[in-house]
Image (cartoon, rainbow, N blue to C red; front, side, top):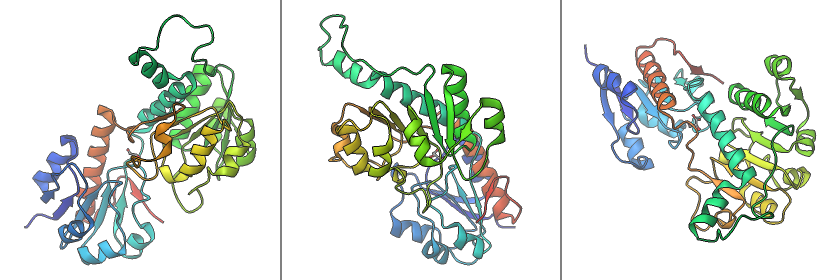
Length: 323
Ligand code: DGY
């Protein structure tokens, strides 16, 4: 029997890739940058399955190009805003994602950014490297305290909960959250209070974004939102760049509407070289690395491979996304 044909849009850890290459007739894109759209459309022709990254747009055009035998799109990410889920569901194409294995790593990244932005770590490093450190300064590089402050979690899912738990356990923070759903575990375990978005913005000292990107969350951190935040507030986004309006964030940071920001995600990615955010010392920016730990990436590769291999055989996926 011939092996299922699959296209893998980038090299992923061997924890998943080895099995895919053994059990499928697999083509793996070897370049460091994503396949250009025209090549992606060519590569998927006749495939039973595709393993995709968040940088690959999977829409009706691509599903048409692949052909009716396409059974599964396995995304190497927990987020799936790059995929038209309704279209896939309509066509009976299963879509998989990689939850849980990156929860702690992502929450840790949110904490790293929160601390870096609150305590001006990157700015301090630049100060040292630029040989501006002349003496111990009573008034130099003053940042924000964390103990006893209020964290506002936007999106109290798995990652939001893990971030809230760190803030509650580590710094005894009061936890507010905004979400469509009540999170009982956060309310009983962490004393979290569900509030509307405006209240969260007004009352939080730290605001950390953990919601998915969709039409309702796109641009939710805009001028009006930043204007409601405290001038001492720290904004952290480890979810998706388009959830904040980058121009409005620049204004908020540059005019002192908020104290600082820590971003693992930007809009677009990579951030444009002339984006004014890059000129600000109170904005820490990382290149979307929240899940970049050994166990997270191996776990993602394992689940993505499991999803792909089950999907090409027409079996239910371990982690399936539906509309
Ligand atoms: C995801 O999984 O959605 C992250 O953004 C990348 O790991």
